[in-house]
Length: 407
Image (cartoon, rainbow, N blue to C red; front, side, top):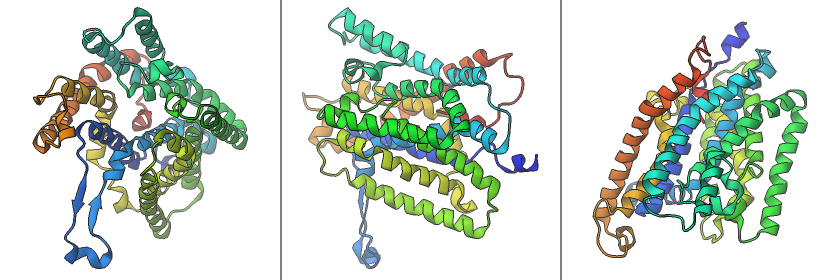
C-alpha cells in the first residue's frame, strides 16, 4: 500500500508538456493567418563569444504541426496510466464502461457543440457546399468521428480543420481498453504489432499514394506507433518509480536529458526547412519523432524539482483547464475574423501578404483574446455542466488522476 501511495496519481509536469504541445499548434495556426514570425536579433557584441547572435523560433512556429504528434503521445500516456498502474502495481483494473463514459463526457459535448455552431453559423449561411449529398456526407462522417477516412471529408471539408485529431482520439478511446488487455498479457508482442501497423501503413501511403500523403497520412493506422510509444513510456515510468530509488544524481540525469531533448527537437524541426512535400517528410519522420517526444516526457517526469516547476505550476494547470476548447475554437475564430475583415482591411490582398505590420499585430492580439475568451466561456457553459450531468449519480468517489483524463 505504501508503494502505491509513493507513486503519484497525478504527474504535474504533464500540464506543462500539454501546454507546450497545444500552444505550439495554436501558434502555428495563428501564424498561417498573420505571418508574424518570431525572430529576435541579439546585440552580437555581448553574446558573440558564446555563439548566441539571435533568437529565432521561426522554425518552431512554421512547423508547429509536428506538435500534434506530441499531443497524441501525451494522450496515449495519460489514458493508459491507470492500466499501467494496474499492470505494474497490481491496482484494480479500470472498468471499461466507466472509462468510455468519462471519455465521452469529457470530449463529446464540446465537440458536438462546435459542430453545431460551425454548421448553422458558418457553413450553411456561407453556402459552403454545392450539393446536399456532399454536405450530408460531411455531417455524418463528423458526427460519427470517421471523417479522416475519406479525403473529401478530411481535406475538402468546410468544418473546422482541427476536428480530425479529436475524431482520431475517439477511435483510440474505443480501442484502448482492449489494447490494454493485450498489453497486459503480451506487452512486447502488442507493442511490436502496433509499431508494425504504423510502419506498414506509412510505407503503403508513401509508395502507393505518392503526392497524396496529405489526403491519407493522418489516420489511426499511421499514428499507431505514436500511441504504442506513449503506452510504453507510461509503463516504463511506473516501473521506474516502483523499482528505482531516485536521488539527486538520477534527477540531475533526467534534467540534462530533458534539456538535451529540446535541442534535439530544434534540430528535428529545422530538418523540415526547404522541403516542398512536408506531409511526406512528416510521415517519414513521425515514428522517430515519437521516440524523441517519449524520451522528453519520461526524462522530464524524472527530472529535478526546480526544473519540473517550469512545467508543473499554476499557470500550466490553469491553461490545461481550458486548453481543449482553445484547441477546438482557435483556428475557426482566426479564419472567420479574417474573412469578415476584422480588424478592417481593404482590397483583394490580405494585409499579412502586403506586410502591414500594424494590422498584423492588431489581428494577432484580437485572435488571441477572442480565442481565449471563447475557450473559457465554452468550458464553463458547455463542457463542465455537460460532464457533470452525464456523470452525475454514477461516480460516487472522487476521480483519481483527474488531470490525466485530458485529451
